[in-house]
Length: 176
Image 1 (cartoon, rainbow, N blue to C red):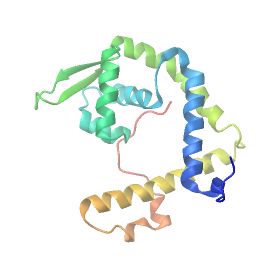
Image 2 (cartoon, rainbow, N blue to C red):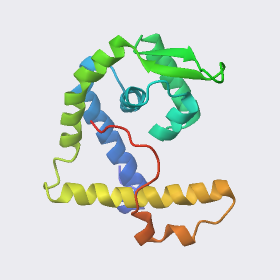
Image 3 (cartoon, helix red, strand yellow):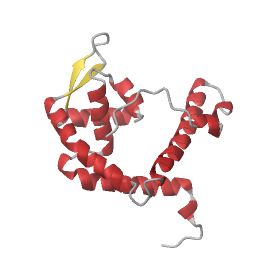
Image 4 (tube, one colour):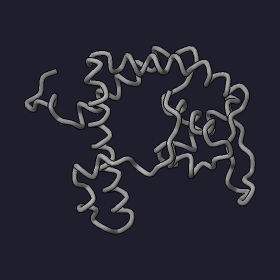
């Protein structure tokens, strides 16, 4: 369908389409494991930080709290993770990878790696790191602005492109 406006150069529209493609490729390569991309990254984070609580998990994975709660519940129902009362706050669950979850994660990693390679396959090997770098610059700048808004400041001084490329202080999760 043709519209009066050419949305092919609109970053939001193009990024949404790219995200749809990335999810489709992920599912094609990982179908046998029955995981979504967000479930996979959640399993990785729990493997990396056994006993993590849901709030911290949300921060590490950069998935909003309500979605994190739904993901955790789905993974627990499938027997991929275990929830235990926290040592300090019994209301906050500590999350652990269940043996079944470790098995699924181990099996899925090569398929996820293949999906990530496939997503970027239209780019030359030299272009791939540059694409990731540019996306990280955009994300870092918007994260700083969001953090500044949450802190009650305008964040403009911190959102300059040369500063936006700095690495975030957020905890790292093992990459597939």
